[in-house]
Image 1 (cartoon, rainbow, N blue to C red):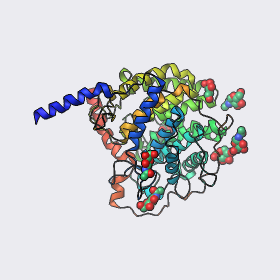
Image 2 (cartoon, rainbow, N blue to C red):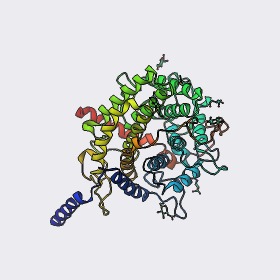
Image 3 (cartoon, protein in one colour):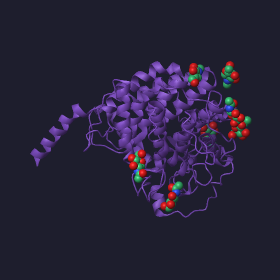
Image 4 (cartoon, rainbow, N blue to C red):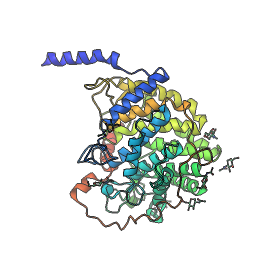
Length: 454
Ligand SMILES: *[C@@H]1O[C@H](CO)[C@@H](O)[C@H](O)[C@H]1NC(C)=O
Ligand SMILES: *[C@@H]1O[C@H](CO)[C@@H](O)[C@H](O)[C@H]1NC(C)=O
Ligand SMILES: *[C@@H]1O[C@H](CO)[C@@H](O)[C@H](O)[C@H]1NC(C)=O
Ligand SMILES: *[C@@H]1O[C@H](CO)[C@@H](O)[C@H](O)[C@H]1NC(C)=O
Ligand SMILES: *[C@@H]1O[C@H](CO)[C@@H](O)[C@H](O)[C@H]1NC(C)=O
Ligand SMILES: *[C@@H]1O[C@H](CO)[C@@H](O)[C@H](O)[C@H]1NC(C)=O
Ligand SMILES: CC(=O)N[C@H]1CO[C@H](CO)[C@@H](O)[C@@H]1O
């Protein structure tokens, strides 16, 4: 037994050197990205008969993945196509993105109400925005269009019923009164709304979006979720005027705000406010989330308490930092070198499992750590394809060749959320939302982090 295990480990070790990917050349990057993309898709079964198009296995307890994560995955595939030019999966992506729009074409499909936060919805909206910004092939005219979908998500979240006076403003985490977390106002929900607003402002030139984005940013600063050193904390509860701040920090928060701020910087032609914001936020993000130049999920990585959600954050970190350099080239010098060292570490973990190339999560170990899943695979796909960022055109706008058709009123007739009649089952409660579990784990992670002083 002991001998067998030792022998197996030795064999696996021998496989490491020969199997690890090379990302030294553009061809090597494309080949690596193609393999990693293929391996990621093995987690997807939505195009098989009897399965639901668009989603990864879930939501829990029916599988590992909440509804939002597939939305994030399609965005990763859109960036993959943009960066590598490989259109193999474009039809699959389009089918998935359109199947999940829901009856009001606003990414609030009733099937997923029980786990539907504003952030969950917005991840699909941001992927639609990425499609619009990159001229991803437009859907047939009788189908919802990318830009209109992003606008629909934005408009449903800008609706007056989503904005109350508790905590001086801001968006709640959960959309539906009946969900756990409706009383929580957090950084990610507001960050996604900010991000979409900034990008819609730049794409359409409509200043209403920019006003919302700026107001949201100012609120997040004002309430103390983002401090003067640009640390971003998870959130707080309305019954405490949002002062009971959970101080866990997650890399996707930094990424979503940095990308949004970079778009605001671009939209305002490089204004001082947004230049200061992006420089401060980029420095803080690199310091906190790239110790020794390798992406590290500080709240949960050390003890490996990361949830399936958290296991995917490094991918957004890499993609959105990369894209930020396209609209704010002053960030390139800071960001691109660290994305490179981080990606080198990332691919060195891709030597696992039976196929000898499955990617792990703890990149700084520089070897496969036994952890695998859609998040782990998506992180590496994001990191590797983002190495090609300076060889691909910056996001388009309506004025610079963007072809996606918008509808400024999309989502404004969506059904009301507060009165949505529904039965809550035990299963619903257990499955409610990406951050319910996240908060529990965050408590653990924060504790570990404070007690070890990392
Ligand atoms: C689903 O899509 C993948 C990736 O394009 C493809 O390899 C697979 O054959 C498809 N499955 C079905 C049943 O169409
Ligand atoms: C909603 O669930 C039903 C029943 O499982 C399924 O047939 C349908 O395709 C699902 N719709 C979406 C958008 O996932
Ligand atoms: C700008 O956006 C706002 C908010 O969605 C919308 O009400 C308004 O009609 C838009 N204006 C134009 C000119 O499209
Ligand atoms: C709630 O916090 C805000 C700052 O975010 C502050 O301006 C306001 O006065 C506080 N309200 C109460 C009732 O304490
Ligand atoms: C940015 O500059 C362009 C071109 O000079 C101008 O049309 C636009 O109004 C400016 N935008 C802002 C937000 O100042
Ligand atoms: C805005 O983005 C464009 C790329 O679309 C870039 O050429 C330009 O330099 C950016 N503006 C600023 C102020 O960085
Ligand atoms: C080049 C350009 O301005 N294209 C479109 C921008 O958006 C408006 C409003 O949706 C369209 O009418 C323009 O054709």
